[in-house]
Amino acid sequence: MSISSKSPIKVMKVAYHLGSQVLEPYAHEYSPRRYTQAQVFACLVLKMFFKTDYRGLEAILKDSPQFCAAISMKQVPHFTTFQKAERRLLKSKVVQKLLQESLFFDGEA
Image (tube, rainbow, N blue to C red; front, side, top):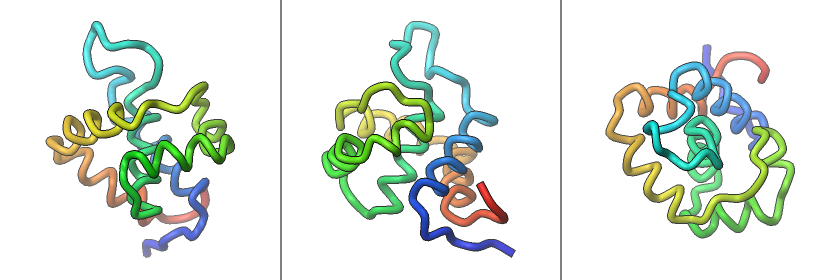
């Protein structure tokens, strides 16, 4: 049975864990090594959780450093990073399934 968590930190941690298991660390060989795909994926799940836009997500992350700390992210990405990553990641059916599993998961994170 799936449950929906009310805790944004738990949802983000689950998304990061799932993303780390399935996604390559970086999109391609020459990607900047600032954020992993799993970290950006977890942020995108947080965006969906809060029902906000990319700029809103950036503001939430800047105002609440515990979100970045939960997934070992050293700095907040620019909102265009999220926009480009979402466009790229959502092409994958695996990532679409991960989104569902991140928002509705079994057990504790």
